Length: 100
Image: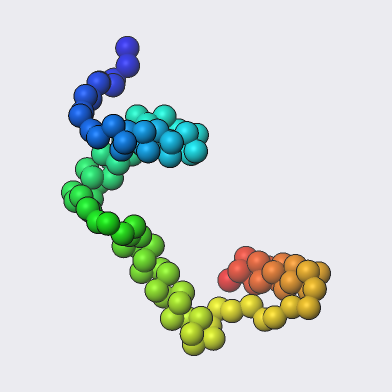
C-alpha cells in the first residue's frame, strides 16, 4: 500500500492552468511540483514570496564568486580561433584537474 495522501487546496483557476502548463513543459505532474515545493519548505523552514525570481542562496553565492573571479581575470579560458584549439585546451584542463 502506498504511503501517500491527498491534499486538497483551493487556488485561483488561472494559477492552476499556468501551473499545469509549466508542469507539462517540464514533463512532470503538478503533484510532483507541489511535493517538491513542500519538501523545500520543510527543508529550509521558510517560504519566499516575491514578485521577482530568486536564486537559492548557495547558487547566488557561487555565481557571485565566479563573477568576482572573472572580473579579476581568474578561471577564464583564452580566446580561440577554432573549435579544435578549444577542445584541445579543454582536454588539457580536464587532465590537470584529474592530476590535482
